[in-house]
Image 1: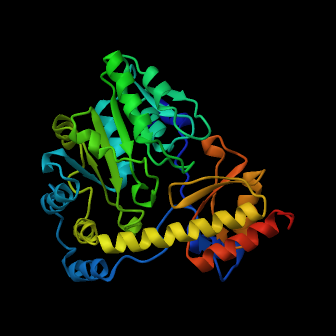
Image 2: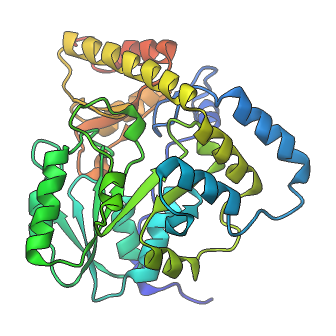
Amino acid sequence: MIAPRKILNNFAPYIAGRPIEEIKRIYKLKKVIKLASNENPYPPPEEVVNTIKGLASGINRYPDSTGFAVKTAIAKFTGVKTANIIIGSGTDEIIELLGKTYLEEKDRIIVSEHAFIRYEMAARLMNAGIKRVKMIKMRHDLKEMARAASSKDKFLFVANPNNPTGTYNSKKEIDEMFAALENKKSSVVSVFDEAYIDFTDARDYVSALDYFKKGKNIIVLRTMSKIYALAGLRFGFAVAPEEICEAIERIRPPFNTTLISQAAAITALKNRKYVKKIASKILSEKKKMSAALKERGISFVPSQTNFLLIKTGKGRDVFRELLSNGIIVRAMDEYGLPEYIRVTVGTPSENRFFLSILKKCLGGKK
């Protein structure tokens, strides 16, 4: 037998949210709800479903490898050129492609200590270094991340809002970060992951697209898996400088996005009414959940996303007990937050069920 690369000997796989059918089977349950993967709990709009149905009979053909139509739609949506767009099987693939394209053993990336783990995984896969910068009150310390940048750093990753904390960084903080990078004359590329941008309602939040259009050395990641309700189709995109897009195109798998995911993304991007409606529902439910947790004296991190990071004590124990009661959430051990669980905001009935079972798991004391 051949051996894998040595780096893979201690390479832990990403822990995905457990599927509903698996939990039903293991625990012999009839009712199971999933609040683990920050998905949209509502189905996509009818127009998207009809687009998918209309293409079903044509899946014997490969999709357009260049993604011309979907890139054109994304360019119109974002206000950039098609040459500035990369498409991928979710932004996970694009993060990995960045690593495979640019990272060598001598290189390093900069991340926040409780940032989305896929950034670190992309670096570890290429045996590159990782500089973790401590958070301040569960928020990225952008100034310190900029100060940490050196000549060996290729990427500085910023999830804004952040997963798993749900916190965000303001325009003022981002301005200060870029000012610090410019003072250092750093060539590091800032990668802003905006997976949860449509759930933000903070007045001082700003999209990194604004900075890209002003010529900053920046990549912006977006996904169709959250508010657009296309998690099952896996489609994401990035806005990046042309030279970065050209380099990634050399190694991008030729058919990494499907005929159906491309067409569904085009239709979904047109429906801003659906996005606003879903955002309103999620924000309303998040407020109700937050109020209920406060009333019971349960600590959580204020969130600008569609999930809450909740402090429960022994998070892994609570995670297991919730599973046995038919609720799938995420334990936060892998993020260095063992006292927490991360819970997606679901439908009103799902949220009520979660809150009732959480009370039971915590011994009815809360």
